Every structure is written in C-alpha cells, then in structure tokens.
Image (cartoon, rainbow over all chains, first blue to last red; front, side, top):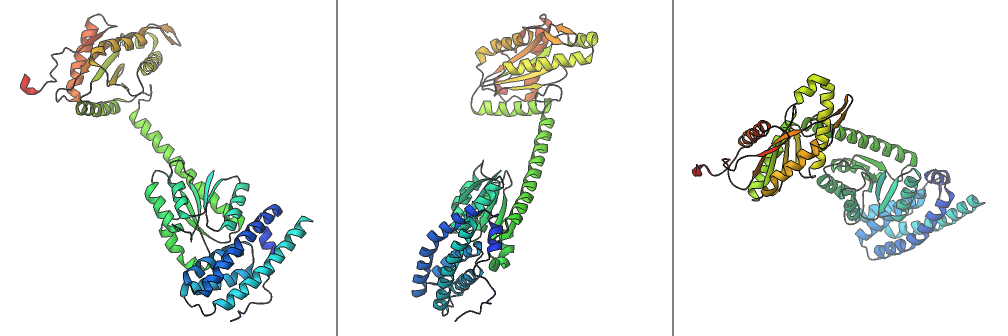
Length: 123
Length: 313
C-alpha cells in the first residue's frame, strides 16, 4: 500500500530544521552523527518486528524513529514512521511491510539531503 | 537555573539539551522516567522539568504523579512533551500533575517562552514562601531584640519539659532581669533603654548553646532554657551568663553604661508533674531573692520545690 504523499512535501525541510537548531551548523553535524548511529539499529529492530508481527515492538521502535525524524524536519520519513506506529498500536499490521520499505527509502534520501545540507553549511 | 530533560530518544534529547544550555540553563538530561523521578524527588533537585510522554520504565504522566506525591515542599514546574497524534491525551497529562505541554518537535523560541512562564511561577512561589517565613518569624520573635517572644519561648519550654521527663533528662531554666533598668530609661530615655536591651539580648544569645532557648519574657526580663544541662552545674552556668552580661559596659549613644542582671535558677530533674506556670512562679521567687540579696547575682530555687509527686507532700 503505497501512501499518497503529496509530491510537494520535501524530504528535508531545511529552513525549519535550521530554525530548530538556532542556525547552529556544528549542532547539525552532531545531530547527523547521532542519527547515523541510532537509526540503523532501530530500522533493523523494526524490520525484525515487522517480520515476526510483533506489534508492540513495531509501535515502540517506529515511535522512536518518528521522534528523531520529526526533530530532523523530515516530514515524509516521519509520516511513514508515524503510520507504522499506528499499525503497531492497533495491531492492524497488513500494510507494515510496504510502509517499512517506504520508510527505509526515505531514510536513505534523508541521509543524502542531510549530508548535502551540512556540506553547504560548511562552505 | 537547573532543568531536567527526560527523553529516551537521544537525538531530541541532545537538541533540547543544546538549546537550553545556550539559553543559560544548567541541564541534566536522562533517558528514562525512573531516572527523571529520582532527580526530581531530590531535595536539591531541579524545579523545572521537560518530560517526554512516552518513555521506558515510567512515562511522563507517571513521573508527574510521583513527583507531586513526594516533593510537596516545593513546586516543580513540569512540561510534558507530546507528539501531535497524542494531543487528545493532553487532558490526561495535565490531570497527572503536569503544568504545561508542548508538541514535539517544539519551536525553540516557544519552548524558551514557556519555560520563562514556568520560571515566573517558581519566582512567585519563592516570594510567597519567603513572605510566609517572614511572618512566621515575626509571630514568634520579639521585634526589638529578635529573640523568641514570650509566647514562643513558653510554648517551646513546655515542649522541652515534656521531652525532659520522657527522656529522664535534666533541664535548667533561668529567669534574668536587668538591674535598675527603670533608671536607665528615666535617665537616658527609652531609646537608650532599647539599646541596652538589644545588647543584653546579644550577650545572652552568645553565651547560650545553639540548642538552648533564649527569649524575651517581658520588658527587661529574659527566659533562658538550657536543655540537657547537668543540674549540678546549673548555678555555675547561671553565673557564667550573668558575667557575660556584666563583664563589659554596654556602649550606648549616651556613652558606656554598666549593666548587670539578677537571675532566678531552676535545675529540674526527672520528677514531678509541674506546669510551666508553677515552674515560673518558683523561679520568679528565686529572682526576687537575688534582687533582695543585692542584685547582680544568681539564686537557685530551693530543692523543696514541689516538683515531686503530690503524694509526697
């Protein structure tokens, strides 16, 4: 079930992100480092929980991912995580695998955008 | 100002910590509700807290309830952080004792403004507590000398008598009266009289121990209660105190004045159901005896003092 995301919604809302960080570019670098460390294990746990249909773990891990992604002003990825959280909460898991694929793809795009943003900022 | 941040999600926690440190807060950041509750329930713990709603071990509302139960002496201003979807649960959060809530991710300017509101509430509370303590002090202390006033020293004496009997301890009670005080007032005026009383109070206080009671009993009369004081040394202690008053002239605006004090002394043991009134009557008699003996001396209440069981009389 591919969700109907408006094509106008960005992978990364840079002005919002920078406003959150008080335009602190060094802080952006720190957050990116934390994201690179924290995200892969969470995505792995989430994938395992989706496979084993463990609704509680799906809810918990996607809640944490959603928190991180919304802090990073990544509306598309955080929306996917939010849908997964909802599925975990209700136990309605049929769309999990598809949404997980979307989330994983969004996270990859987000990482690229964040790296670019940091590079631009450092120049 | 100290603030506690509790969020199990490291990235948000780091961002909040940096934002608030930049705003001048002294931040403690923890990753679960149990640690948050531990910090907030400490006596010197932070009085501002930002708690994520969903956390392992204890969630935000559970931490709120715990803090409200355990830290009753001071108000802790608690702001819950919630995601947009759980906004409908805001009522639950506020009813658990939270003061405010913010939707994550929160705008840094809004966050700081909300915390400033919290600070204003805490400052208001501090002012009220200060005013209450000030009133409590005024209600129990004499405005001229800052010693305990008559009501307070009598009340404390009565408690000490009960404790002394219960613990089979001993207590020494002194009633001191400044000699010829009326002459000071008549000769130099009441303002100088007040200076003398203030200085006598200071000397009495500095010759007593921290756990003794020193109060202004009436005009120029002072009541001193020496807790856990060996009855055998009661008179010697009274003499020490009398000497502390008389040793040096009191420096007044009208020049140095020699000031002395007469004292009635009661050394009580464990026996007897004696009321504060009975005891003070007896000490008053001893004080009269000291005055009659030429003043500037201490007289013990005679051991016949009827503190024994009524059956013994």
